[in-house]
Amino acid sequence: PTATQNKQKSASETIKQENSNKPLDKLRLYINSIKESITVSDMKALYPKAKFVKMQKRKVGPNHKIMQLAFITFDNESDCANALKAYTTIGGEKVNVSYA
Image (cartoon, rainbow, N blue to C red; front, side, top):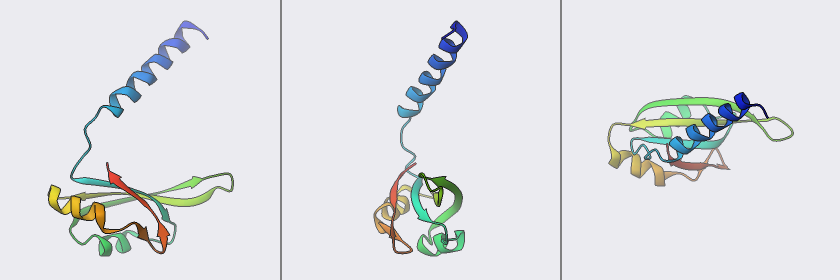
C-alpha cells in the first residue's frame, strides 16, 4: 500500500472508532430485518407515540433479498424505552431493535 492508502485507511479506522464511542441516542430506535411489505404507515400504527419514522430498503445476502430498516424518533426517553421492548416481531418476522 502507498502512503496515501495508509492515510485513508487510518482515517477510516479513526471514524469507526469515533462512531463506536458515541453514546446511544435514547430518543431514537434502529430496527432492521423488517420485511419489504411493511410500510411507514404500518410502523406508525405500531409506534403511535413516534414523532418521526424513516425507512430505507436494502438488498442483503447472496440472493439480494430486499429487507428494510427503520429509524424511529420519539419526544422523550420513556416512550422510546417502552417502544424498545414493545415488538420483537413485525409482520410475522423477527426484527432487531436497538437504540440508534
